[in-house]
Structure formats: structure tokens, C-alpha cells
Image (cartoon, rainbow, N blue to C red; front, side):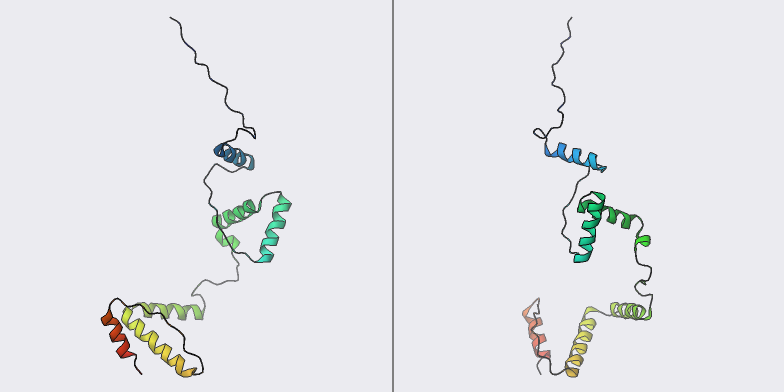
Length: 157
């Protein structure tokens, strides 16, 4: 009995003309040392001097700006304490942070209605201290007409 051999074409060698997007991505990634993985595009805002420094570093290393930023982020995520400034204190480490944390804790013990009432009192106090300020427009939402009516009655001066 004869065995039939299937004729197959040799595997495609990547050339500029026959690259599929997947082949192109794999080829580029294998040349740059990255592992094939999905990428996402993001938009960030940087100070001009930082962007210029990033571009200079990218030219020095003969790499893209994206790769330089990605490597910096990888270093930050791997060892965040080594990258952060040593002089910065954590939230709540100084007396102002401790006071803010204490205020937050006490505010969270209140009901939403109590917090709203307190914020209205503080607003009235601020307006009495700075009477020259023009009144600001507010957009307030209500779940029902009854709530609006109660609010209107309580805010009549």
C-alpha cells in the first residue's frame, strides 16, 4: 500500500510584503526583547521638562519613548520604595495628616444627613466671614418634589 504525502508549502518567511499584524507584532517584540503581550494605548500629561528628559534618554539608549517610560514604570512597580523620594512623609505621619485622618474618622461616624447639615453650617459660617463674595450657582438634585419642597422651606431667609 502506498502512502500519500501531502504537499505543503514551506512556512512563510517574514518579509515586508507578507507580514500580518500578528506576525509584525511578534517580530517587533522579539527584536526588542519583549514577550508577546497585549498593549494598551494611554494618554498622560507630563511636565515639559520631564518629557524632554525622557526623549533625551530615549535617544541616548536608541529606544522609543514608550519603551523608556514602560521600563521606568516596571522599575517603579517592582521596587516602589526605592524610586520614591525619601523626604516625603506618608499620609497621616505629620500632625496635619493626623488631624485630617481624625476628622475623616469622626465624619464617617455621622449619618449622611448629619454630614450634610454640618457642611451647610460651615458654608453659612464661611459666607458670614466673607460677605463680599458673590453667590455661586448651585445644581441640586432631588428624588421627589416633597424633598424639594422641604429644602425650599428650610432655606427661605
